[in-house]
Length: 347
Image (cartoon, rainbow, N blue to C red; front, side):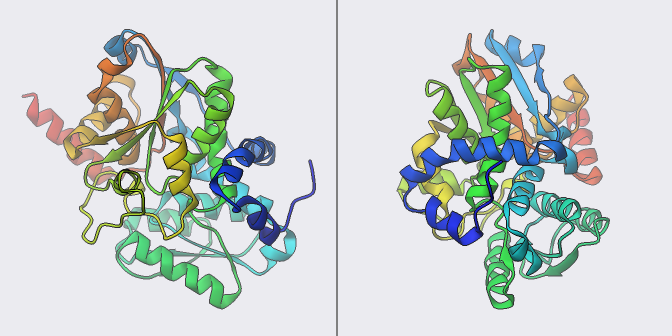
């Protein structure tokens, strides 16, 4: 494997323009696969007879819900940490997250043996905070909005001389997430469409960068909750849109907008073919459907992509489709409430 570049040299090379970044990412995804391969799971690409019947085609579920930490976030965080030179890691690493990225980051530190600090919103889900404490990572709290927490944490990283590890706005994070797309195409090289939930855009940027380079005909479909459609609104307007009063959503893992200057914005504009917005009822129905039909627990963000397919199954008639089931980290209380509501509705 070639010698790792310094963080500064990497960003200087990778952020010249979106076209350059788009061209370089497939190479970085290949390197990421080698770097993180020994430490992550190549998750199943699970054929769903039920979903295939809905569109008279072939539908596969990429089960990142089965990944270490219960989310695809284990990939990007680990790739970022392991890509850094030892001197940079020695200064300490800092990130912000409401849950999944935080767990991926904490696990990456456990693997690399480095010190790090995680900022969470003050209203972070207690079960996610408890899970983080098992890794022994240092935690701090600020704000009640994910983007607010993120911007504050980044400022703290600068002030303390620590390395900032963005949840999505970093080529190495994107390359790590892009290994999901690499695995999909390795098993289904003629896939017609891939549905991916969009929050900050790191996952879909990575997946799209690989798939569009290898098979441009494949359509990349971004899926967002109606209550938090920031990337969709941004692409429609041609500039980043941040909602002043975001609504609550079951898809808490994808909620919130991008920081100013996010590289994922241009990647989404260039590489994502279409967007589907999903209601809270549709997200809830998808979560319950997955439990009922495939006996698997998925989180709200995963329910967005599944719900988007179920909402528009007819448009994929006769096609080969992959749906990224991005995570499984839903609280027992939320899942019980959704299943109870679904049971009541059918009696």
